[in-house]
Image (cartoon, rainbow, N blue to C red; front, side):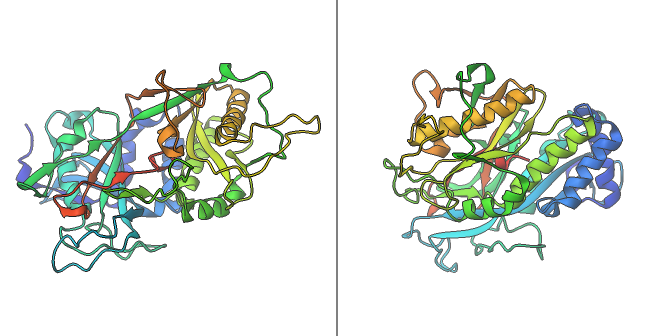
Length: 420
């Protein structure tokens, strides 16, 4: 018998509850790790990475016993910078709210590790927890945006313009409602699945001589992460001849900023898992082309997604402006955006092959690069399909382009780096 909903609430986990939540997750999410190795990985991510410091574990528990270890379910959230652009003509959402800047860095939350132990399943606890979570995270309607600041947050929650997650249970989270003002009065919204597109490149499709010269593509190592992510986060949206002004959008746009903590967390996660299993690490974590920060600067970063794939984290394409020679034999690299993209993908495929993997996988590649998916589903020689797991879904809490009745801003840079 389920506990009455009115007797439950969502509480920040105590250290003991957090550790207990890891014990519960172990059997489902260890992926071959021993219990000690699994806990070491999770605690290492929480305490040893910048993004981990933005983690909060929440537990659904009785109001009368918030610190109980027999809580019903748990969830983790990460407080992170979100860049929001609204058309400059946008009126404030409420008369008392000051006008919004066209582009600002504010706060959003990514959601992960939703887990209910078997004995508490099919009783509505997960839906109850996620419904309450909206109110814990959401910026109150009409409130001014809260600027994101680096370092430890003085507060946590009730300041997010959005929350997003990657669902492995279909559209379940769309039924975990948050109530907001709409054109016809109050409306209920859940986490809306956005664009679960996945492009796969197979190692078996590598050209006979795929490896680019080191003089053209530079391997990306962990020492490159701070400079690379700082430069990328200054202006990450694609600008192409067909789309020279990425800022233009009638509804506005937002993205989770591709900062150092996102890349550090992803690579640390892969490293801790691989070393615990005695697995081989890749020789690098991506490749870049051109001078960092220049118009032609392009790069691809990836992480390990065992047992069979490298997963693209961030794929950026610049606009080539010069002609280069690949090697002393005068073999030329096709110096177009697509040519550079092919070279970056092929370099990643070579790394995948060396690790014994059979593919490289990227999310929303075409949209992120300003390219088109062909009628056959092909983009950059990779096959694009709608994926059936890790479905990207968002709930928007913040202001809209035309006040409360307008369209939600578009989620841009919806790539693998934001997954957690």
